[in-house]
Length: 387
Image 1 (cartoon, rainbow, N blue to C red):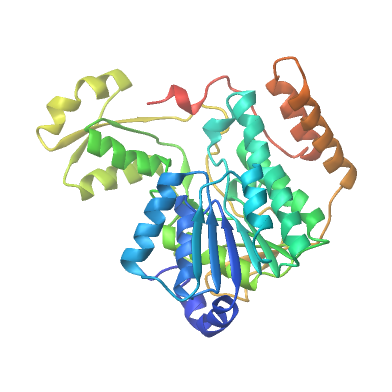
Image 2 (image 1 turned 90 degrees about the vertical axis):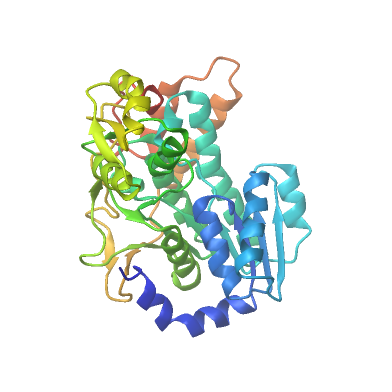
């Protein structure tokens, strides 16, 4: 199958190389699956400087090994730095560098399961919202050509607090766009990305454990390379407040996780055997796997924050579906409620500084103050309660 963005990349390759080859680029959160893909796309086009920041030291090591083993060395200054964006170490590093032309922020807490408690939820807001504001302001102070931040398809008509945090991020970036040109991307699940359910399938296969998946949840999927290409295209070609998303008639289809599990096992030479319960799937694993069969447990989703299907845009958003072949663009104006944003900042700061234990309900109320359209339903059950 042809890559989703192949025609768009090929038709603009010369311009991409012209813009990237002499540029100084900082990639934040560059050691995750999407971040590594973005780094590779920039590295291919030989920027003057490419600096990568991430808190995962091990993943940064693998990123360097992967690039050296495939793309080589290039002529520019390539550095990786294992520091936290919210730390003094990050501030010291960035403060000692020459100004960047492009700052691309791929860091995120991306899991719906991360909203189960107030402590992880507060860190999600710190990473997804406030660190984004911080780094956008660094870009503005440096006079960067562009600040890029990754959003998510779950920000469109959000039903979970993770997607809501990214939608709030988009609103804050509308404010920051008055001082620096901003572009973003919303895209589908990246197939087999770190921590994803599909990545979990690989882990279960390696550990000879049952596969479990919902049979009523549909998702779009792109490859890691496609995720990197989409982010790069938005960073280089996006106009102020543009949000790029995958758009290609007939190429991108919603797929059920249970169907993917079946195809995954069949591709590895196993016959899926559906079990009625988790206990049955666990107890029959050794017996079935020895016969080239594999236990699977499929279930109806009943956990907080799960959305039955995914979408890239909302009904009132202005779309450009003509400028690219495989990419749609949401065209935004800097339309934001500064009072609501300031109240959100104050409320989260108050909760963070409170001597009392943090209350998730208070955080959700703060969400609703800036994002009244959030359709969050607390079910009292989270993905950690699933196999």
